[in-house]
Length: 137
Image (cartoon, rainbow, N blue to C red):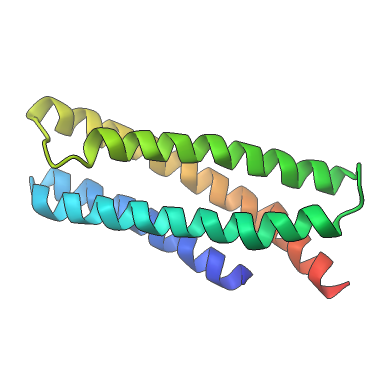
């Protein structure tokens, strides 16, 4: 499961990179398709993390442990990040991009990509090894 989640991280970041390229070349239809694909992949990824990763860690980690607190804090942080992704899609995935929205969207993609890139690195560095240790125990 962890390998699949890590692979999804790359796909999600690649999707944002593709979206930015489509915008830069004013390929709005391609941008719209990529953003829809990104949204679906992101939702699927979050669902898998919530139902498999976080639930497993919540059940298997000792109550009150630092590891359990870390997992719960990361789950809550991702909930907030998910709201930002939804807001991004609601704003820019409408198919009605004006020149001003294109510029704003490019800025938002850069911010979102940085946020998700840092978050995914954090998960792969701390949360995923924790899951692997618990699963092996």
